[in-house]
Every structure is written in structure tokens, then in C-alpha cells.
Length: 509
Ligand code: NG1
Ligand code: MG
Image 1: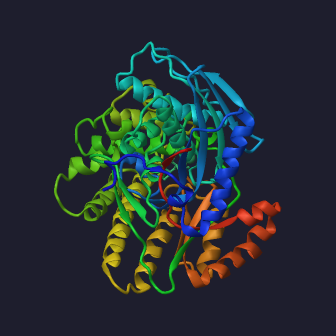
Image 2: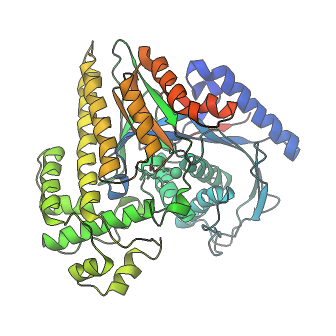
């Protein structure tokens, strides 16, 4: 368990990335620091760094507080920062000129919240969200209200593709929250605090998200995937993939179908959160479990939902996956498969329809006539069971001296089943994702699936190293070859991803 730890302070690039990347990353960091000095006339004091993440399995279940199995990526977001106590302005610039410079005044501790207009697709919102989390953290921790935090000069360099399912957003929010805390004088940042506040912060950007991305970004360790649990409290177990011969590699293939989740929320992501929440309420009602807790939930989530249905009905010590099978059978029997209207749900919950809307569909508005409670609940329970199965397979194989390929075949099957469930039960895949997965499987991928929220973005494939080239070739010929892509897009369409390190702080000497 690495949670009760502080964010590591590193003194060199070498401590952050695998050996093969040292030279390139060193150049990138030096370039960032040089550009910073050029721009602001004084050197940066520190770099706050947080990575993206690839989710290997456990999709759309974090907001129901089931465990997930992601890994941090090597790609990351760097914020070079100088603290400017002489004024209370935050200046934000990006090494990429398409992101326009922004500046805003820091509110005093007692002032209202830092305003974030979530209806706009505005890059600085992610910074503001993380920074606001840091402000709130300091307020909670007794910093006197009259104090005005210092300003900052910031230059950003990020290489996690945005809108691609690799969580550039969480990387940005986590790195910003970390930078904010450091600028306000927190000398050692607790990892778990940072995760918790970043999860709450990211919701300011308009997505009712779970906690997987921020956990993976902060808690990741080089060489390991993270088995992250949220209930009863945040914890992470690090687990490596078996070193079979040939070794497995993860290929990440971008569909180049970008989805701006904060715009499509009402019909995609936020709707799914509402559907699973209401599935839990309806199940609880029909199973006569009494009211589910409404506010509590670790990490500020509004409802523990489907998790509570599970525990409410089964307070025993039996293995999680057995219970999950049982409860999904029950969900299948109890919930109707054609979906429910608002009115039907309100009637079951014995609420006026307006109250239902007010309670579940107002903070994050949604657009839907029918709510697919059965399909969504089935996905969540079955996916949660797959995560536990994969974790167990990995735990067993990591004990073996010479693991055979068979374990990768089994892991791959779980990934393929997850993709099928995302497509058929959760309706969060798309033709492009399905096609990349089908092509990869044909050429020898053990398992292929979407990663992140879906509806576009990236896919993840577990492939034997000696077939990686063949898989790439198939995609180039049959998928990317048919699109009009720039050379850069073609170069970046597929990346090999190894589990990378989590967030770090680097103080410039
Ligand atoms: P992406 O779309 O990759 O950022 C989102 C959520 C996660 C999780 C996944 C689906 C945010 C910030 N993150 O990930 O919490 O629910 O979808 O598994 O919205
Ligand atoms: Mg995101």
C-alpha cells in the first residue's frame, strides 16, 4: 500500500522515466525551463508533474466505487512554476501556442470560489479546477481567511493526447492542484489528500466523474499497474504484468474520434452516472433495503449506489466475484430490459417527477427519454467481477518463476469481454473502437478494448511483443490508411505504453 505517503520530490529527470526515455525527456524538461525564463525573465522554481493513465480493465465502475485496474502513462503534464508573492495574479501560458495565455486574480482565502465556466471548452479551466481544490484544501486546514495566496507564473507542457481517453484532464488537474498547494506553502503533499481533492476538483469542469484517473495519476509506480479500491477508503495495490516469453506489451491506438466529454455529458457520461445511480435506487427499493446513503461515500461521491445494493443484500465475507454474479442475476430479474421513463422511475421511488429531476438531473443536466437501468447495472456488476478476476490472475502469476502464456490468454479474454459489455450493455463504444479491436485480435492481440470513457478516444491492446509490428501494420493499412491524417497524427496514432511513475515534484536548484 503506497497511499499513506507523500508526493516524491525528485532531483533529476532520470528518477521519473524509464531509461530509454531519459535523453528525450531531459531535452523536453530543459526546453520547458529555458522557455520559462525567456518568457517571464526569471527562472522557474519548481516543476509539478502528473501523468495520464490507461485503464486496463474496470470501465465506468469507479463512480460506483468498485475497484479498477489502470496504469499511469509515461506521457504527462508538466507545470513549470515561479511563485510571485509580490502580486496575487496567476499567469498561465502553454508551450503550444494554440492554447492562448490567460491570467486571473487569486481570490483571498475567505472570498467566494474561483469562478469556472464549465459551459466553455477552455483549457485554463483544468488549471483553475485543480487550483480551486488546493485553495479549498488550505481553507479546510485552517489557513487564515484574510490571507491572500501568492500569485504564480506558469508554463505548461503536456503530451497526453486530449479528448483521447488517456486522461489528459486528470493529469492537468492533479499537476495544478499540486502546484497550487506548493505555492501556498504546503511543503509535503500527502498523496491521498491530493487524489481526494483532485477528484472533487475535476467535477468543477462539468463532468460527474469517478476517482480512477486521479488515483492512477498520483499513485502510479513505474513498472506496475495499480489495483485501486475506493471503499471503505482509497487504497492501491501495485501489480506487475507477467514476464512471459515473448513479453506482453500494451499498445494504445487512438481512434482519432475525439469526444469532448464536458459537452456530450448530458447524453453520455453524466447520463450513465445517473442511470447507474437510479438503477441502484430502484433495486434498493424493490429489494426493500431501505434508503441508500445519499451524501456520504468516500471521496465526495454523491452515492455509493450499486455498491450499497450489493453490500446491503450481502453482508457476508464470500469472495466478491461470487456475490457479484449473484447480484447481477438478481438485477437481471428485477429490472426491466426495455428501460424506464422518468415518470416510471419516480413512481417506483415514490417521488414526484420534479423531485427526481431536481435530485438527480440538475447539477449535471442530462438529455434522455428512457433510462436503461438493467443494462447499465449488469455491466457494472459484471465488469467489477472481471477486475477482481484479473487482479487475482496477476497476483498468482507474479508468484510464478516462469509464467506461461496461458495467463495472458485469460487476461486477454477478460479484456475482450469488457469490450463486449461496454458495447452491448453500456453502449459506450463506437464503430471506430470496435474496428481497431477486431483488427488487432485478428493479428494476435490477446485482448483489446476501449480505455477511458469511450464513445471515441483510445483503445488498449495486450499483445505479445513479437506481434506488435503486425498489429500496427494491420491498423495502418486498414484503419489509419483510410483517414486523412497529418504525418504527426500518423506517427502518434499508436504508442507502446509501459506502466509509468505517478505525480512528482521537482525543485529547480
Ligand atoms: P476519461 O474519459 O478517460 O477521462 C472517465 C472518467 C473516469 C472513469 C472513466 C470510465 C473523468 C475525469 N474520468 O475517464 O473516472 O469513470 O471515464 O471508466 O471523467
Ligand atoms: Mg478525462
